Length: 445
Image (cartoon, rainbow, N blue to C red; front, side, top):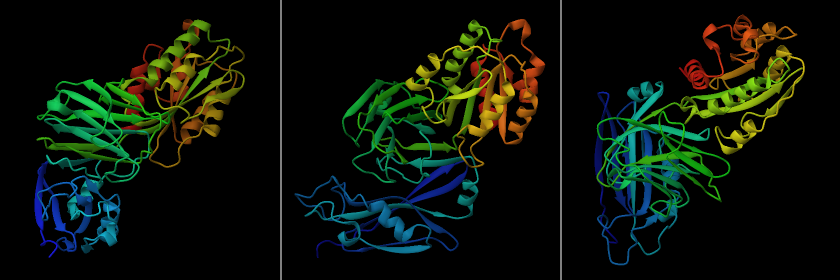
């Protein structure tokens, strides 16, 4: 016998708002078959899978065996056979998973839940609650990432870990963000699990065992990864990878004596077009105030950590796209620089033409779940029928907001309200973050 069957099952009870969500752990030695089943009316949901060996405690460990052994196909192979099924069987064999460590007697370790009516209800909620144990085992049960940010809340003593990976599984080429490691004193960014620290910062008591704390992680095409606290616009930790990895999935875990309670709430994805009047009716000092408003707006805490894109349209007698939605990550150096170097133009004011141009040409994302908005910077006076065009834009599903800029005595508040159709959607140049919060509240609830 190469080894006798070792089968273990552990149940982790996560007391989340009174529910009894269960994560079950099965472990079976090589050359045997793992069987998974759920009660009648429920289906298997695979949380994580490992074929290989990371411990000397199980399945007849012997000298010379590796304990750093993982098949990269573990999760995909188990999900192919089991995901959504009431029961399944998985041969624990190199023929299924490949051989990640020749000469080592391996095992298959699977975490799963049985989904039923309670999980269907959970799927309809904006937030999902999850738990992790103390064993540093990533869960990969979140949907594929669709933007350039990931937000979460977590309650833990220490060692909160988030992985950003090309695949929904633990692998050597993935980013690992540790928040509150080393007894809740330090946070780091790595490019491989347990690897080199590319960014390190002191973060004493950044996580808490008694309350949920919110965090966000953003990434951009130039390889910059930023980690910040909920409600703060600037990251407390950042690193730029010169050879960026593809990021499509997020995993999460705790370890080193700490379990964790996690809350994942649906991020606010929205497209916002800033539409700025550069005509002669806007004095140059007012243009500078509008430009400063934009720079403050893109850095407001209310916008950070979401899937929000910002574009800019400029206009006088004719409109033009200064930069498209999605060209720059929100509040990136590229976006800040582009706004900073905008130039004053002068000319006639045709606000209605600009609003129509914004409606017809902006590269808004498709889908009812991506709200659309535009912020029009003008004095409320124009030589065309801007009220009609504003109504057409609103009818097309674009929420309109206005910022009064121009000679102060000549700013027409009634005209600005005709653009927005709401008095509480009109702002002055000192209210950038108030406007940002209002937009997020309106678009995302």
